[in-house]
Image (tube, rainbow, N blue to C red; front, side, top):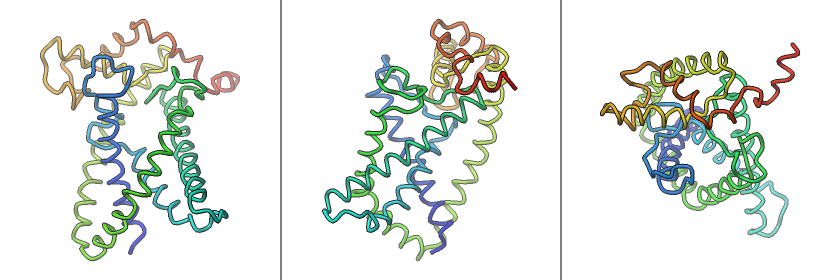
Length: 256
């Protein structure tokens, strides 16, 4: 079967499944969400998280390398494989978070309160979660994905669904990038890093006060401008810890 179509299907599946995982995690388990509100995760409007899509692609590719792990014991070999999977996804998570902070001045997530975190982007706790998810994928998802891919190869009409997903995804990405550029320009001008979840919270509170629709979805569609929302966000007491001087490699940039 065409590898491109396989990876496209995995990206779609991972993005949708990951969005659902994050949605329920943030609603019921996230300690920062004290009001237990529904929060649309990520910077896109639709129900997908690209980070999980890429992660599922990585897990799929790494699962086929188990036979190359030089350990005879079956349990030990799988543990090493899960560790490798977690490390690879953590690396992807790190560079994704770093790129958004350095280039866009936006922080998509924040692990600052967790012990042994690195720049608030990665930490051992969430790497452990990735290892658990890797094991869940290996035992509960990977066999069914292989069956799904076999079914997909015999029913290529389903590729239309995959194409439809990417069409919607592309439109959403274009609209969301426009919002991110506005946030980036404001953050750069005010020398702050915008924590996206905090900005979303400010917009949601405003929309609730004004009794506007779309408090959960279409969060950036508001009667007020994104600039005014950003100004209110800037004046929040907690924004101080996201000063631009804390951006990684800031000193090198200034010297240039």
